[in-house]
Amino acid sequence: MSAALDPGEFERARQSAEDRRLVAAAAGGSSEAFERLYRRHAGRIFGLCLRMTGHRETAEDCVQEAFVQAWRNLPRFEARSGFGTWLHRIAVNAVLAQARRRQERVGAEASVEEEIAESVADGEVGDFGAGLDVEAAIASLPPGARHVLVLAGVYGYSHEETASMLGVAVGTCKAQLHRARQLLGQRLGVEEGGS
Amino acid sequence: MTRPVDDRRIDAALGTLAREVEPPRDLWPGIAARLEASPGPSRRSWAWQAVAALVLVAVSSLVTATLVRRSPTPVAQQPVPASASAAMPVAFGPSFALNGEYAAARAQLAAELERRVATMPPSARQKLEANLAEMRRAADEINAALARQPGDPLLQELLLSTYQQELGVLASVNQLTGTSAAEEARQENVKL
Image: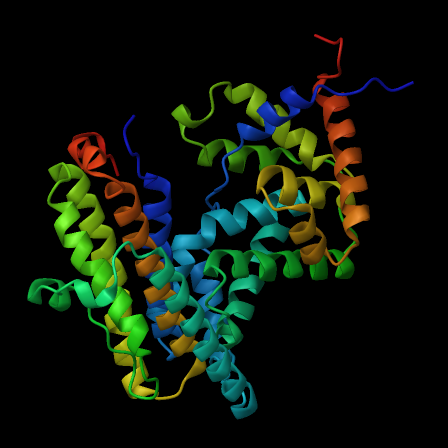
């Protein structure tokens, strides 16, 4: 039996070391370092915002707001947590603030699907059409259920982390996730005993 | 009446989604314009800095204790080759004294690493060294920033986290590659 070192662990260690180096430079006022951080994290933050809002332009606003807030609050970043995780929390706050200011649009827009389709590498998703169906189904969920599903179901946060990010009780989070999965299953036609 | 959903198929469907979605246009120019118009990163208060410094000392001690426990041989029995010392800078910024035991544990892990990487396949060794080089680069640059901004709690935390992570990598390599002589004989199977 051979010893196998987890390549993912080492890659994550390298990535977060680079993040810390850039955060140190950005905290000293280097906008070039902060731009590097933007380039490294924009895709993940945009994906999160797009799926949480279900609307491309709103997601773009949220991404911009998240990075501006991150810049202003950089000295408050606690290095023990990853920069990406910290940025996710800021982005979720930006989405929730947007949702409070604007009436959320319900229902998927074609543009959302197009943006996602363009960004997904061919080899990454086996059934491209099915992937688009999933995105559309997520975008059509009610906001509360959608937010929980995106954070917990897509980005892998625990119930506790998701509840903390959204400012809701853990029980509420679990109930919303259950509801979201039920609705998603119905919309995708993957109920038990179905095709 | 609603039918229960097939959880495995839901999970499979969610698993197909890419985590990253590139924005349709470059959002940086808009962000940069707002950064210019806004105040720069605001510094934390001195009270917060004092608390952060205390936390750093506590964390440093904890890491030291953990590493010493994990180390297979006592620090004093392990000479540190000059090359290992050179490869593993142990200087914190001028305002933060490095815990002596911490430095010794780190040096010991570095020395063990040197011995064990020699048994690794070249490709695995290259990957490990590239990852460690990035961590050292981060530590060097954060140290340099600390020299310019002594006492900055964010920089201290960033540096400590970088060292902790580097130590974690060293410890896991040593643990996985050095459990027994038989294990060493199988190092050709170690993959990074």
